Image (spheres, helix red, strand yellow):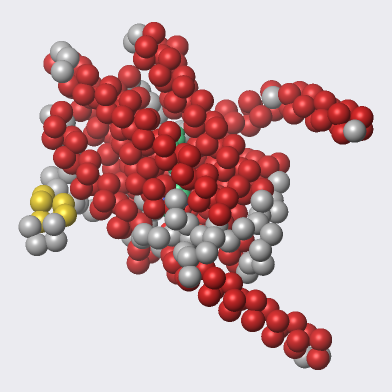
Length: 319
Ligand code: FAQ
């Protein structure tokens, strides 16, 4: 090793040490700060996947806009879906501060290199599914995102604060739909229970694999990207959702679910991890439909991006 290389290595070690001290003291990391390459890559992976989830997540609900049962329900659903698009935009912007362009992120989504949440590869079959998505899917997303409000990367944590405020409205609109249907006819109650049965387990999968099977957990905790583990957050979601289900008379589709006096939490049955792995590796019921649709609308919208760029360039030349 030559002398220059040795000095460079020593400098990097010093920078890493300073970086870790800062993160441990609770300081936020900002885009222009020095950061280890692995930290940057970890965040690009997580934030871009998060952004893709928000945008792909518009599809199952978008499918119901024209069939919403009332004007009020339609307005609320439209606003919710628009919020999800906005969340995607904040998150793409947060990821761009780490040196990746939106085009690269979209290309990774289209090639299958970047993932998005397992949950959006299931179909929304009835209006009750819109209730279940808002209540369970947004409910699970909030539990995770409240924890991420204190993540170490400044732009990501600030995006989370705003997103959480909107997600809590989404969770309530979903719960309202379910509560309404549970006060309705026998058929409506059956429809709500059927949606619960289909969305419960995939919602638990949203928190990711068990802690012992989570390869990114080590770095995520070391650098305070994650503040709580996948299993901790999943348990938190179960504990609060079981009670909400009881209030409106919905049954949790898990025969092993029971209150544990000793731990102060609900014990639950095992998740079907084969299903999870299949879904996140492209073999879920709607993976192809979701990505094909995204590719098509991305292509159809090319003229908007070209026009916006031309407008921007013209203004930039004038100034
Ligand atoms: N789906 O080592 P870990 C929403 C992958 S937003 C797909 O535990 P990590 C709003 C993981 O990427 C929902 N893949 O990974 C809305 C990794 O694979 P890789 C999205 C998953 O990052 C509502 C491998 O498994 N929220 O719903 C999933 O430490 C309604 C190993 O896993 C976020 O993205 C999964 N569920 O922990 C919108 C929150 N879980 O990358 C519309 C931010 C794991 O090596 C309508 N993300 N994998 O190929 C996170 O907190 C984390 O990334 C976790 C995973 C907790 C998801």
